[in-house]
Image 1 (cartoon, rainbow over the protein chains, first blue to last red):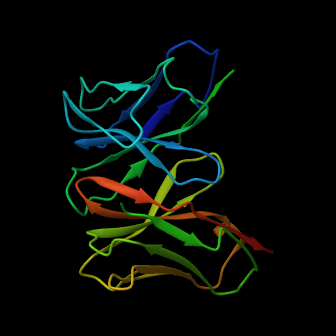
Image 2 (cartoon, each protein chain N blue to C red):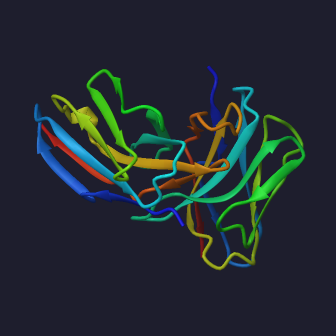
Length: 114
Length: 111
């Protein structure tokens, strides 16, 4: 089955620690995205990548970093600089960043930082 | 800056009822609008994508309409079922590769 796999489903960290969220896709999609979802709010774009070895900041990139060394993988690191890291993180992909390419989402990682 | 609003925030209906979810956006210069479904604790599933040149799209019991000039879209669900219970989000693409999402409507269909 083709799809997007995010792991782990739940993640707990102590304040001050960096943590990396995994996102892997076998859809052969060029573009990948990271979104953050907070209760009662819409999704907000953190970073996106249109092609391997290239990525751009989204609307709330501060305190986050990404890499895109392989087409299939787009890991997100939540650094200690992110002031409110507790949230539900969603990874998505699309065939390309063309105008009418629908997004496909993974099942998310819920990060709790205490 | 594009803003997307969904009304109502929550909706509860009896099984079998037809219902309409609303989405409005402030910048009418959009390329497309997408409706998604999200089950609790899960990712989003794409339901329908309407291109800016289209007026509506249909998939089974779902029909989405788009009125660009007024900045509005509706998602019509016919003969609702308990399995339709979820949060429905709309998102618009205005430029580049970015989508702007609404906050969603939480739908409960009671048996």
